[in-house]
Amino acid sequence: MATTIPSAALVPAAPVFSQAERLALAGFLAGYSGLTREACELDLRQDASWCQHHHLQLFQARRADIGCFTRDLETSGRARATITRRLCTVAGFCRYGVEEELLDHSPATHVRRPRLDYGSHATGLDRNELGALLVAAGLEDQAGAVRDLVAGYKRAPARATATARPSRRRSPRRAVSTCASSPKTASPAYPSTRSPAASPDATT
Image (cartoon, rainbow, N blue to C red; front, side, top):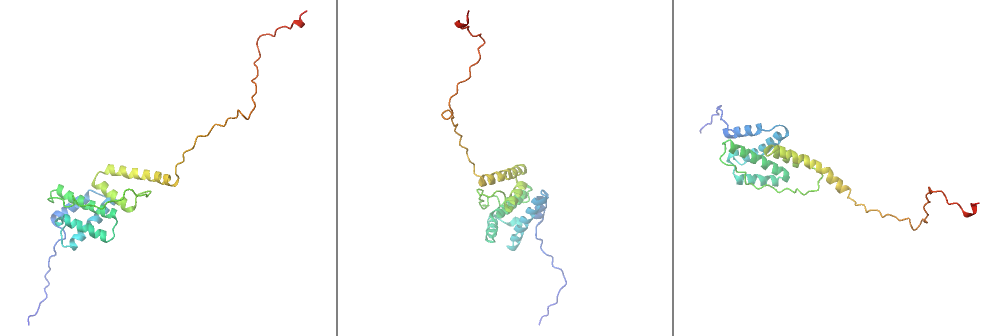
């Protein structure tokens, strides 16, 4: 009977990310700070966990894989704004890899994103919408996104006031005529500057 002798040799673990993926992750996240960086880290961590669970590298994922990642997010009950934000982060990360010549092409370019209902009657942005806007501000045009954010908060009180207090148009008042009720009075005669004529009886 053969006996098994345990070995104390260490088995090297395969790295989670390749050299190109580590460079892309470090360079992509270096361009952001604060809440935007935290949101991007969370989105990329979720994407990397999904790829590792399906035995894929980040740069091995294709358009169909990102679509399956989207379906899994929808199945888990994530909000549409959250899914859109994460897909926006993944698309920005892939675009950065292409620009730095670390990736041949971006598989997330033509991935369909959930349609958001921009016609809601909310008086402001919720947490997910604000997060999506902050991520879009970092990935696209920061100045334009900030202007949209300020304009959205300026329009919110106006929409709330218009909903709570419907506008009323005042009807013009009719001028009430008092000519029929008040008697006509003669205007006082102005005193004449000419001396009154002498009466013929007064002459002697």
